[in-house]
Image 1 (cartoon, rainbow, N blue to C red):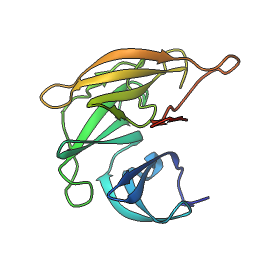
Image 2 (cartoon, rainbow, N blue to C red):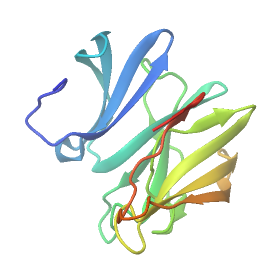
Image 3 (tube, rainbow, N blue to C red):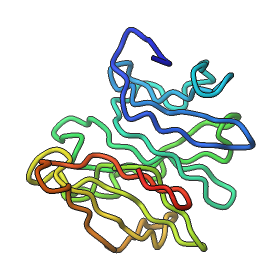
Image 4 (cartoon, rainbow, N blue to C red):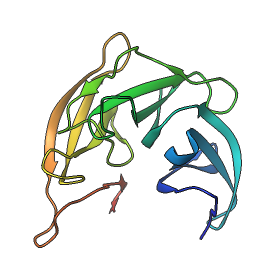
Length: 182
């Protein structure tokens, strides 16, 4: 156990920035999106800051693109389920600038592709967003979506469907880094 807090934690999104490991675990029960810094890899972490306050959000996933940081997250907004909608928050600096909602409305309202399903895959200038298809059930299958545009209007196109292995009823997360797939 690397974090033992008084509320549920899951979906530990770990990433490296400027030779420092950071983690954004799902902390929906705390009504926050929090950033933790690794002080001794892999077991010692300390809270660095709250990135977004007063938010019921799950599966928050960061994306650094050009001179901006984006947090893609599914919010618990009245009348919708976490699986249904995806929002984006933006900052010019992960640590020193506040994150603000990029669009007033969710960028995706579709249970078949809204909820995040892993880290972004960036390769040769392409950005691939991993999403869960929760239409049949939570984490039924995953989709890979090519991000075409983030600012002024969010656009993406479908690339691939990843189904669970035979005998499994779902697949929740897909991460890829160089030649390692988890």
